[in-house]
Length: 280
Length: 290
Image 1 (cartoon, rainbow over the protein chains, first blue to last red):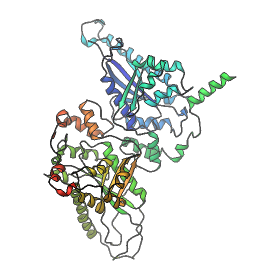
Image 2: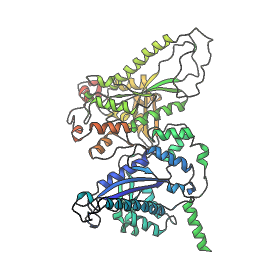
Image 3: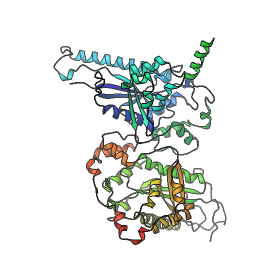
Image 4: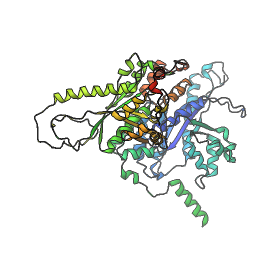
């Protein structure tokens, strides 16, 4: 009996704040992966997945994005938002780093963590049933399958690969080659053409899962912040617990929106530095 | 007769009629958007929101029992301090025109208002005295300690999306006289997406145009297309509806296994109640636009 491949979904972003749409991305991705069928073109991928975990990784404050409030709040709000979820959690590792961390590094970190957990679970299982071998007859002792970690993102993230000097080619290769993408796109947008037009991406298209979001729910965090600043209701767009937290801590104000105004995003700043160094 | 307070805002009650099959976050958003809109005008104060699920006699395809739909709406509004569910419409054995539901709620407010005025009459104070400004605009109007006035009754306005407004043009669905009374005597609050055709639709109808001051158009900038149809479709396909409907509603649907291919087939081939009713009525065949 073939085991399903365990998958962990990782979403990186500002989560400023976490909205119903962010959480929808996880649900859509999970449904999609659970309904994938065997891909006859690539026999080595059975195509049958089991999503075991979802991780929300809020970016660190050093990202330098306009209006980004402290990571402490963003992590707290994500936790509140995910209270009712039994499979998605927030991980503050990235937000605690002193400097901004490239996406590929965040992926590597979480993969290593997953691997560690996998190894210790295997060890535990082996210790529990020392007499049974991996080719044993008991179904209860099936060799656990190594989990895969995939980056959950929107179509805009995929499109950002073509922004000059935003990405290193080797990083893109590692992200789509070693890990994989689950890319949610809305009605009216079709990233498959974009993939076809890129040699690199089409090489790894079997590892890019395109999910269409038919029920439009484009609750942008920017609009949420703007509504909060204007005293307008955001009920039913973000969880009640997050609304209460925002009110209690008075997080989003005209002042908070002006933070980092005019500053360059950290990844772009780094790229500029590299370019300048090459020019010398 | 006491003088009218120039600072007094018109009180508004928002009434949403529909299948609510099931209720979604989008339905609930309509209320929030409408309330914010009215408050921003500075002339109105929304005091209540009413969700009135349609009765089973509506006979729409896929419509499940009113009991469930009312229960889900109640669960969804449990933690709202101003939106409530009214099951009067759903309890009627025959389908009721929307106008009748509007009239019912208007009448209900009238009687409640009379009772309130009688309870809170105080000795006459100086005429023209301004009512104290409420610091929190979301608080309901306090009636005590005010000069007794023959207060205007809160207006009941029909809250809807652009699809309902545009359904005015569907032959035999609405009676022309009903549409007229709705916009003339009560009012409409229509929430629609940016780039919609609603304004054009109003322009092309003499009746709607005449009463356009009583048709409030609210733009919804945050695209939110969570239709009940899509929810039911997702459920049939075993897909998640989390974060599209309140979690209590999702749990209720799951527990009671409400939506299936069988439930979707209910009333298949049956003529919708308004069509049945108006088919024999010559007045209904009048066109909305002239």
